[in-house]
Every structure is written in structure tokens, then in C-alpha cells.
Image (cartoon, rainbow, N blue to C red):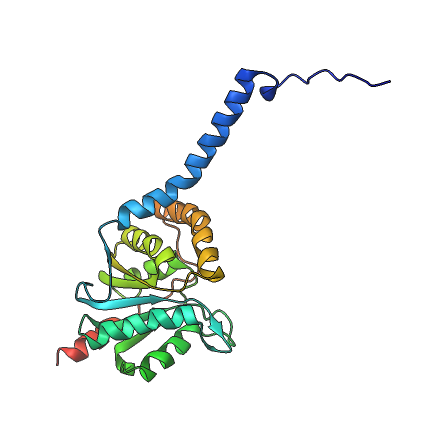
Length: 229
């Protein structure tokens, strides 16, 4: 003998209820995409290539991981772009910002070593050892290193968020998104950005203090001052 179960009353028990459920899902989807739309809107007219990037005193390179103490291929391409900007006179100083929260993991020093091996003098490279995420890097560039205008360098999937966050932190920013093979890492990065944009919107709105602020550092102003003499 088969039992006939009666429908349980609720949102999806009627046509109107199913319609409301669909509308709720659609609304949630739109809200989830709003932060990404914000980063695209802010960065819309500020993205450049290394060839047409504006001349600025400072280029900022964000960390992107190490392999056996050396920059990952993704980070190496960011550093290649920074070296090109320096060689063509479009950047006078390179600020490398990354994670050095553990003694055995030092992104900024690895980035410095790579840049000096590719023709950027050591006294034109300034290291930020507390760039634990994009917001921290942008705030510290402004508040700790005194950067007011910069060209930011990252992968295409990240550069819009970087520009939007540095803009919110008070740095007039332009972005160079370096080209990369569309491999699994690239697709992962693009997918991750949808979620990271949500945190970015909250950071821009509430402006939390970085994980580590510390005292002001004269590295950028000292390097620029040496060029003036």
C-alpha cells in the first residue's frame, strides 16, 4: 500500500511561492556581483599596458607567492613589468609589498633579488614586509611610505580590485594587468576575485586598520630624494 504524502505548505508549495524563491535567488546573485561591478567601475578608465602607463614616481608590485624561496611564475611576470617600467623611465622607484610573517617566508626580499637581477638598482627598490593583503598594502603605501600616486602591477584578474582599494586608501592609482596563460591558476584567481571583491567593498567602506601598521618609513622619499641630487 502506497502512502500519499500531502504537500508541505511553504514558499515552494505554490506557483507564487516558487516565483518568490526564484526572485530571492536572483536577488542574492545580483548582490553577490555588486562588489565586482564596483571594482570594474572604479578601474574602468585606469587600466594600462606597460607601453602606455603614465609616468609616476612609484610602481607598486603586489606579492603572489614563492616557490622554494623564489617568485612564482605569476609573481615573476609582475616583476618583469615593473622592471620594464623602470627601464623606460616610467617609474623611478619600485615598492614591493608582500608577506614576511614567517622568518622562512620572505616575499619582499625574493622580489628585490629578482628585480636587481633584472636591472633595477637596489637603491630604487623599497620593501614593505607587512603587505599581508591588498588592502593592507594600499593603506601602508599611503600612510607608511607616503605614496600619493602610483602604477600598480598585478594579474588582470586582480588589478581592478587593487586599483579600487588603493583609490579608497587615498592613492591615485593606475593599473597594469600583466598577461598570463589561462591555466588552472588563472581560472582559480578569477573565481576567487568574485568573493574577494566582497571583502574589498567592506574594506573600502569601513577602512579597517592594517594587520600591522607600524611607524612611518622614509624609504620611498629617500630614494626619490637621492634622484634629485
